[in-house]
Image 1 (cartoon, rainbow, N blue to C red):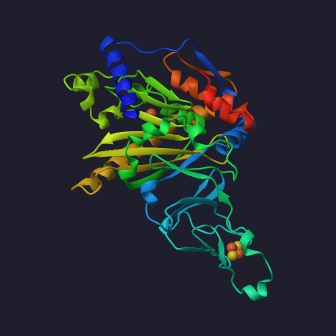
Image 2 (tube, helix red, strand yellow):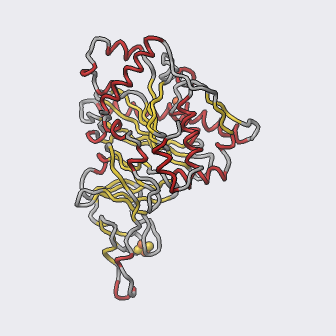
Length: 395
Ligand code: FES
Ligand SMILES: [Fe+2]
C-alpha cells in the first residue's frame, strides 16, 4: 500500500514536471509576527505541543540490543530511554527518586543497571529501584513506589517516539495518521548512526518553516547547493506531517523508460520528510544513502532552539565512507548554521522589534501554511478533543 502511495506521488511529481505546473493553495496566508517571539504564546506551544505530541528522540538502530540506552534532555526534561532484556524500549524521566539527581549522563551506552552518581541508588532496565546504599540506616521506604517515572514510548519505522508527560494525550497511531507506513520505506531499521552534530538556531517555528520551504533554495543557498535547484514544491500531508518534493525533470527523465513496478524505492522516497512538530529528514547519495535527520528542540526562550542533526547510513562500512561522511557532515553544518540559521536568527531579531505586524506565506508555500494552521488548531484543542482533531484533519 505504501509503495502504491509512493508511486502515485512520483506520478504526480512527473506530471507537474512535464507540464511545468505547480499546485497552489487558494490564498496568501498571514501569520502574526508575535507568534515567533511572544513569551505567553511560546509557553503555550511548549505545554500544548511539545508536552503533548510524541517526539522523535532516537532510532531503533542506535539502541538495537538489550541493555542499550540513550540519555538526553528535551524541552527541559531529562529523558532516559532503555532497551530491556525483553527487547522492549522503555522511557523514563532521568531523575532519581532520592533527591532528583540526573541518573544517567547524556549520551548513548550499554548497561544492565543505572547507578545514580549522587548517592548510588540503583535502577534496572525496567526503571525499578533495585538498590539503596546503606539501606538499613536510610530508613523504611517502599522501593516498589520509587522507580524512575515512566514515560510513554513507541517504536515505529525505526524511530523511537517519547512523550514528555506520563499520560499520553494522543496515541501514536492517531498521531501519525498512517505516515509511519511511508516512513518505513526509508529503511531506518537497516541503517547505522554514523554521526551527530548540534547547531544553535532561532525560534523553533522559524527553523521548521525553513525545512518546508523550497522557495528559498536557489536564493539563500546559491553559493552552496542551490544555484541550479528549482524553487517549486509539492506537498503531501498526513495530518500535520508533510513530505516535500520538487517536481523535477530529472526524476521524470530517469524514470521515463522504467515500468512503475521497477521504480527504485530510493528514488521514490527522495525529498524532505517532516514529522510534526520537530523533525525533518533529508537524504543524499553517498556510496549508498545517507540520511540527515534534524531533530529540532526548543531552547530556553522563544528566540532559541537547537537542532541535533543525526546521520544514518545504509552502507557505513564501504571503503572511503568515513571521509565521505565527515565531508557531508561538515558541509551540512555549514549550510544550516551559516545560511539557514544565520538568516533565521537575524530575522528573529528583526521580528522581535514588533515593527512588522505579520509575515506572509504565499500560495506556493502551502506546506508552511498548513504547519501554522495545525499549530493554531492544536493550541486551541483540549486533551479530550485531540484525537478527534487528528482523525478529522483540518483541510
Ligand atoms: S539523588 Fe540519586 S541517590 Fe541521591
Ligand atoms: Fe535552507
